[in-house]
Image (cartoon, rainbow, N blue to C red):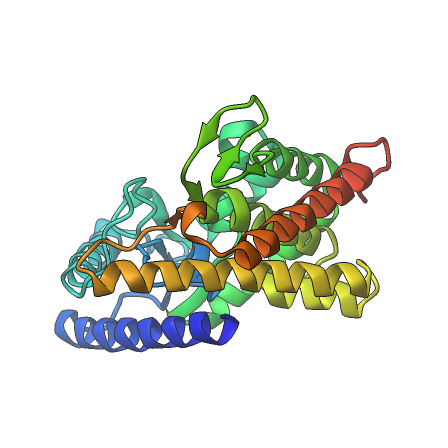
Length: 313
């Protein structure tokens, strides 16, 4: 499953690269160097057959007295056209407007550094939620050194901020629904039953969030979930047993998601992340239950490390 998501991401990167190259040729040289950032699952190289746009523009700080409306207008025009072209290529717009065409996410380096610095220093709940999207950024086209410099700043700043890490851990735990299974039904913590299971929200997201918190805590700049987990294991920061179980649980859920999406596309439907447990074999149900048991182990580790009085520094 990991290889499939990598191929999907590589394919999407090639489309993006070609489109942005043609657009840059059409619009002429930018006034200052810039980088097109991809965020979320695209930033983690974990795209499936259902993906929307999550992107941003990071451009070099103009020199003293050089900031001008022309610079902003160029990048806003570039972002608007790029987002429209991506939509024409089959990539839906982000409903939350986490796109470069939103002026808030088309900014110079100093502004982006200020964004991340503020999110880290003032981890209030609405802003902490942005970490699920923006802290997994990677450069996709353009001046990658700008993104690398920003990544270095984020990695170094976040690892030394215990309140921020604690807030991320709390956010991860609070947004991870406790799920159990009763026959063909999914049961949540308050006893409500459903015949459907959103694998992305309930299964994959807690694992992605766990890996992000631990990576930031230990100064790991990698953005891929499985790569983050492997580094944590290689450096002795989680046990090799937990790493192996987490990797299998993550890959299995990705596999279920991909198979489900393919079936929907083959029958003319719209790919989504919601499966029907009733359609799984007994072995698949058993494996899925084991995957959710692994998620609880990861959440328990977060509670112990960040919320039990032990300082996260």
